[in-house]
Amino acid sequence: MTALDSVGTVVGTLRPIGLDELVAQASLLTRFDRKYMLPTADLPFVLGGLDEDAQVLEIDGARQFAYRSVYFDTPEMDGYLSAARRRRRRFKLRIRTYLDSGLDSGRHFFEVKTRGPRGTTVKQRIPYEGELGRLGAEARAYADTALAESGIDSGSYRFVPTLTTYYRRTTIFLPATGSRLTADTDLTWMLPEGTALRTPDRTIVETKAGRAGSGADRLLWSLKHRPCPVSKYGTGLAALRPELPSNRWLPVLRRHFPTALDGSPA
Image (tube, rainbow, N blue to C red; front, side, top):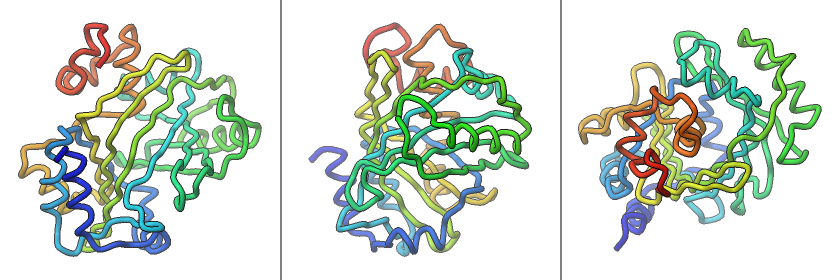
């Protein structure tokens, strides 16, 4: 049995929760995000150790869903560099597509992520119906407004696609703290010209909770996993484009993307 088969077995034992109920109870558009990158082989132990009342998102009988995100940045990589240099005012722009049936299948959303007070993450989004390779006028205006609210003047910026990510996500709701855990597997990163990187034996786990954390965080800590500055956008670009400054992500790159650092396919 593969690690992903074991994950499916554990997830299959959890009680389901529907999308509307999940959104109502744990939308958490403003939250503290803690990210962990770990071997996929460890994921069944994490999911199996969650509280008994943990629930898994289920739609039309499915409990895992495919996502695609197209990220946009300036040609000068202002968004990437603001994160790499840990600036307080930082941002991410992306068009997210839900690829599987039942979860807004084929629908696109334009999302803007910024930093809120005391290190919180703020995500704002609208439906998107334009081309995936460029931002339409409505999305551009939305981005400028959202960034201005965060103190970022983007009026002179030109946004171009810089990275596409693909992955499969399992979402867990933890009722005791009203928090969520997501586990992203089958991770793939691709540059606009087609250069790609896959890490099939790695999983990104993200907890979305209040400042104090959740039971999932404490479980991960007990299993010797610690939060790390992994970012699908930042770390993926750093692995694929070694000329970019990447000191912030070097520990993650060395541990989880070992061959990406010497120019070989991971």
